[in-house]
Image (cartoon, rainbow, N blue to C red):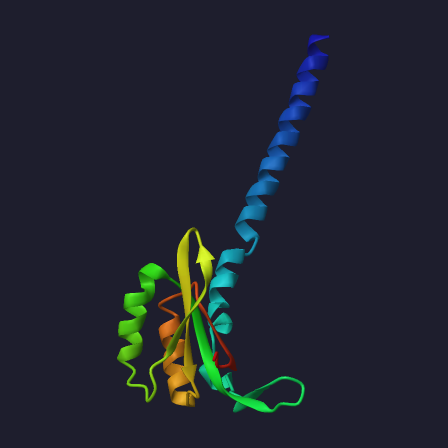
Length: 145
C-alpha cells in the first residue's frame, strides 16, 4: 500500500512538472500583446491630412438655410478651459472659436469649441494640440447658431 501511494505521488509530481514547463514555454514564446498595441498607436492617431471639410452644410430637407462648416473639438472639463483658451489664442485664428456647453459629467460643466471654416493647416495644428488632451475628440460638422 505504501508503494502505491509512492507511485501516485510520483505521478502527481511528474504532471505538475510538465504543467510548469508548459506554462514557462508559453510565457517565454507567446508574443506580448501590449507590445503589439504600442506599435499600432501611430496608426490610431488622427492624420490631419485625411480630414476633409465638406464646405457648407444645410439644415432641413430643402436645404434653404446654409450653415458654415465647423471643426468641433471637445468635450473639455471646466478646469481645462483656461488652458484651452490660451492654446487656441496662440493659433492666431481669423475668427475666435465658439465655446458651447455640451453637458455635465461628475457635476462639472463640459464644453466644446467650434472653429469656423478652418483651413487644412489649422486643422493639422489643432490635431497636434488634441494629443495634449487625450480625452477629447475632433469632428467636422455644421456650426452651431
